[in-house]
Structures are given as structure tokens and as C-alpha cells.
Length: 103
Image 1: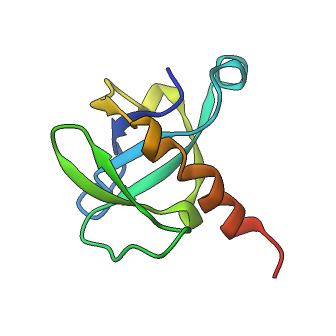
Image 2: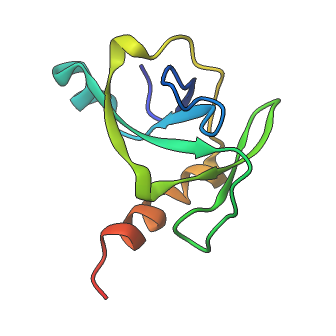
């Protein structure tokens, strides 16, 4: 399992959230058996910084829903459909910082 890989959502809400992007580093994932992911929402409105648009290669744009970050057992994630580009990877830390930052 690699950081920034995009996986089909194995959960019940796959129509609204068709993909999950792995954001946890491989070193931690290999030791815990779980991976922190961020849902990629279809038909959602982007929010500046916190929920930007990212591209699923060959599929289209989805909203990176950083406020819905969660951990999932890696056994539930099947074959990745792609990987985030460098430009889209750069949107993750500011999005998470926006969610957990102080105001």
C-alpha cells in the first residue's frame, strides 16, 4: 500500500464517496495494518483549502473531503485506481491543517 494511492471505496456510501486516498506514510501503515484515508466526494462543492478539487487519473475531478479523514483496515482496500499528482498531493497538508488548526 502506497501513500497517495487512490482506492475504490469498499463502504456503503460508495455512490457519494467513490474513492479514498491513502495519506498515511507506508512506514506506519506496514506496522499497524490500518491506513488513514481521505474520502474523495462526487458531486460535492469544493471549499477553499479545506476541500479542494483533486484529479483521479482517467476518471475526473473529486472533492478531497479532509474533514472526513478516518482510518481503515488495509485489508478492505483493493487494487488502487491511480495515484494523486504532485500538485494534488500538495493540497493535502493545508486541507488537514485547516480542519485541525486553531481559530
